[in-house]
Image 1 (cartoon, rainbow, N blue to C red):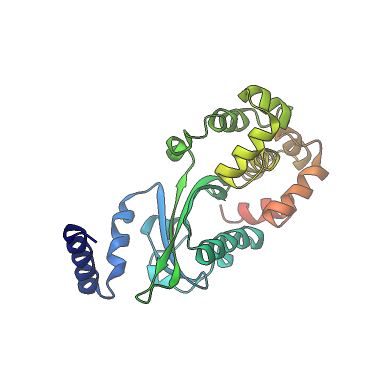
Image 2 (cartoon, rainbow, N blue to C red):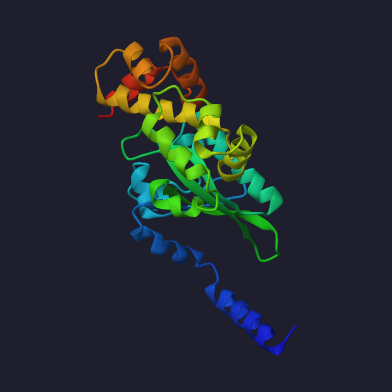
Length: 255
């Protein structure tokens, strides 16, 4: 190791020793980024730190309210399980999870697309003691997906035309790639397939309509791109963990 590099390592070590147990101060800059939510969890996926925008999004005023809590305190069970599964992957592999597209709740309490990054946090003995990460809106992170040239136009098309007759084949033709290539790029960039992305986008539209309108659920289902109310209910149970009717009652009671 060169003398210059050794000096840099010593400088960092000295800085971290001086830091002691005051790591929470590194969370503070995220308090001023309203479109980015920052968090730190321990190895059991319990919240340790959370930025002010994240606290506000989850309906809390003080950080003490979230310390020790887990995702299933705030999200449907199936959504929380997905978050924890990613936590476990990062902890076990010690490899960051970068720009994972996930369903998350927007300010209107409706599922939308957000981009998550998670990084392992190491203790003084070099072992992973938890994770830290950010959640940002998809619109604010589109630049991050430019390396996946075939993906952004497809994502934008699905978000605009979700109720149309969309198939994996038609979207592959639109992107001028093979079905296999499009599937592989979606899996690589987002961790989900094209069909799942379409379904989740339709569910997001249905959620917004259930909260914001008095339309019958059967109409909402068709308007969102599902063949009928039964098809919507099946996917709603899978992704939201409850029926459309129960979701409507619960969320209207919060309005």
